[in-house]
Structure formats: structure tokens, C-alpha cells
Image 1 (cartoon, rainbow, N blue to C red):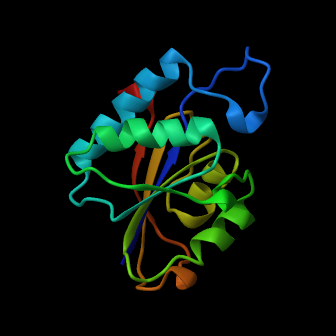
Image 2 (cartoon, one colour):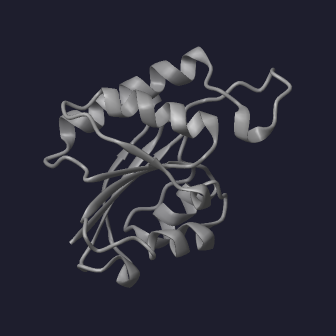
Length: 160
């Protein structure tokens, strides 16, 4: 079984005149990320084996904050192709994962994450908010074979 957690980046700063990839988190984004990560850590019955982040600063910072909320330190690997807003590009990237691991957390972006959760999971969500989390499970041992799975959990920080 493959377990995939989509963790949308925290609320980012828009007032700074920087390139989209260099936008950092705002203080509220940091707090909401901590809330979601703490709740996720408390609810998971496994420790994710891989932690992958988009190359965007806001996603990398979200990943760093989230990892710190788990008991075992984990290495965050940046995957350039996770800087996408496309469901199809996200799916293509996930299907290239090595079958050497069965669980992963991805830190990235909408609309890709919301659409992925809706197309690949079993529960519809209108919109995955910043610092929102979706945990999906797939009945396969091979990432390239993932198809319609089950939604195990949806976390929205404003509801925590």
C-alpha cells in the first residue's frame, strides 16, 4: 500500500516585490502550519519515509516547520517538478517515485493539490486551504500504478 500526504504550503507574503518562487511565509502561515503539522503528527500511525518539497521558498519553509513537529528528524528533499499547479504534472512526478518507500509527504501548491485530492481520493473538497493537509492511500505496491485511492484524512487549520 502506498500512503501519500499532500501538505499545502503556508500562507505566504504578497506585499514583498519578489519572484513567486522567493515568497516567504507570513506569521499567520507559520502558526497555521504548526497547527496542522502537530495535528497530523498526533493522528498518523506511521512515520512518513520520505519528505519532498517544491523548490518554492514558501513550500520549503512549510516543510521545515512541519518536520520539526514530528518526533523523528527527517531529511527534506527538494523536487523541482513539485513546483507545479497542474494535476497532470503532479501525478506524473509521483508516478516516477521509487518503490523502495511506501509513504511520502509532499509540500506544494494549489490547484494541483486540490485537484489531485479530488481525482485520486474518495472525498470531494472544494478547496485545500494554505497549510491544509490531505492523506490518501492507494492499494498498490508501485507508485507508477496508483489510481483512485481512499481519502484517509483532511485537515484544515482554521478548523483545528
